[in-house]
Structure formats: structure tokens, C-alpha cells
Amino acid sequence: MNLLTGVESTELFGGTVSPAVQHLIDVARNAPPAQVEAALWTAAATAPDQLPVYYLLYKMHAGRGQLDLALSAASKGLSAAAKAAQLAADWRQVAPGDTDFSVPGPARFWLFTLKALAFINLRKDDRDTASALVAKLRLLDPEDHLGASTVETLLRQSAA
Image (tube, rainbow, N blue to C red; front, side, top):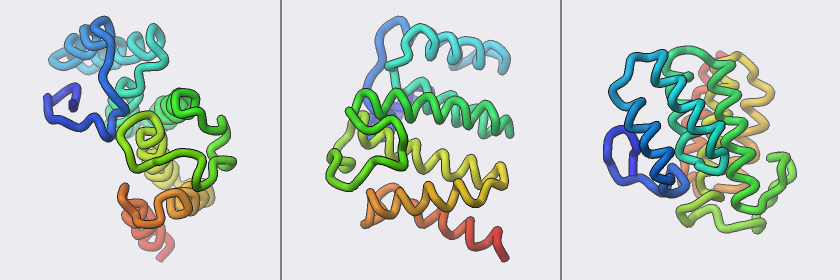
């Protein structure tokens, strides 16, 4: 479920959250911006295995143009998802066949967060990292179910 809007999307978020984390998200839902940030980072610190919190953090920070914080949140989320999905800690070492990225859960969240990292790095004008992340996405998701082609298009457009 989209934790802020109520729309079903566990496929992207990597699952449900504990009641304590849900309470912090509920606090964040209608809070002023500074309180939103504090509530979500508190949730991540107290329950680092709760993947949906990382999504909310990196989306919030990216939306505010706080790209270093978005990068940090996405990196922490990628690490937590790798651990939960039993993937290599270094995204460069993950290979096709390591897991099934097509089913909802930590592995799909990991892949979705890899795409988010590509977007964030592109926005930070780190084209080399963004390109490497897109190449990994293409390798792991050759049918482009998660839309790596969108980042590829942005990379091409930004090079022109």
C-alpha cells in the first residue's frame, strides 16, 4: 500500500510495515516539512529493515531537491533490500539469476531503488554512475518492466 496515499503498491515498496513504523508514517502524513523528515528518519533508524520507509525518504528528499539526502536514503534502502533479498552488498556484483526480480518483495524493491539511484545520480550530474546503474538495470530487467528506458532517455537528452 502507498503509505502516504493509501493506494495499493506493495510491489514497489517491498511489503508492509510494523505498527510502530506505520504510526511514524501517519505522523508524517500531515506534518509540516521538518516534522515529516524527522518522523521518517526516526522510522528508518528504529526499524532499518522496513523498506517502505526508504522509498518515502528518497522520494521526499528528491522532490525537495535535497539530492545528497535522497542519495543517502536510497543507498541505505538498497543495502537493506539487498540484505533482505540475500543479494550481494555491492550492486555491481548482482547478476541475473541471483533472485527473481519480478515478484513483489525485497528483490523487486532493490531493483526499483537501483532505478531511483540512477535518477538521483543523473540529477546530481554524475552521468558515469547513472549510466552504470542503467546498464545494470538493463542486465537484470531486460524486458524493462521497471522502466530503465526512461532514465536512458534522460541520459541521452542530457548529453545533447
